[in-house]
Amino acid sequence: MPDVQIATEQCTGCGMCVNFCPVEVFQLETSGEKNTVKVVNPSACWACDTCVGQCPTNAIRIIESAEEAADREARFKPSAPPLDPAEQQQYQEWHEVLTQTLGLRWNPVAISLIGHDQPLPAAPMPRVKLRYCQSLMMARRGKTVMMPAQCHACPDGTHILGLTEIPPKLASGEMYLHFKKLASMEAARQMIKERPRLPEKSTLATLVSPLKDAKVTPDVIAVIAKPEQIMWLTMSASYSTGKRFDFKVSGYNAQCVETTLLPYTQQRFNLSLGCYGCRASSDIGDELMFMGIPRQQLPELINGLKKLGAKAIGDSRNKIYLPPNI
Image (cartoon, rainbow, N blue to C red):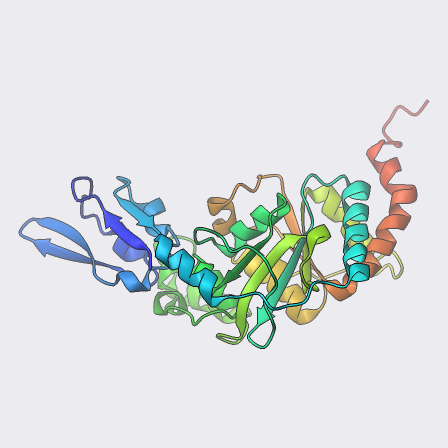
């Protein structure tokens, strides 16, 4: 378990860590006129660092032990066969079409939700706990990251993706009021009620990598790009049909729900504007947004993108209708 440390000389006893901890690691005690924060349940700590971020005096440190990391390595041994070379080549070709036609700066990301009955691939686990959205940001920069529940730092996203149960403070909606993200408990409960989630403990691990380096057949491909680039992907999906689309977007649980779970469960692509969590805890730029595409739908988008890339994309980017036309 992580080592939860409080610098008592810096702690003011404000109780912010007590309020914001989703799993009740801390307890506020009063002795005379002075409040003191105690670590009473360290084994429950997820290392989500919410307490660290909310502490006004930077009095809290969360340190993962080398023993915990070594235990994870010993428990999760790879046994999955390597991808068929033809399938691997297909992903590399799709990667090339997406990056070159759209001019993507960042790698498209292959996402796999590995069930308990599936073998684990040979993929590195992080040395420290990460939020799911942070692992996506690493994958867009070229890293491959596999995370069983013990590697996840965010209890919210982790239960949504089916790795764990939901902590009581999240289930009740209390946490969202502390963050001042919703007006009332009623609004918080409604948000929780509407968001989808996989059955508890149905997922063994999440796996993310650049699409060109996929270790297993991905469930979803995430594209992290500018709105203009996402526009072309949306047009690619309707190239053969001319249909319009309905997207589910809220600004809550963006990467776990909107970019991953909805495309995975509904088998159609979805857009996301990001959320409080991913924008507060990762290096995602303000100008970027997200698209999650189920693996089965990607060939259709790739075909449409190739067609649009032959003329329409170039014409639009060259501003051919910008006056004066001479």
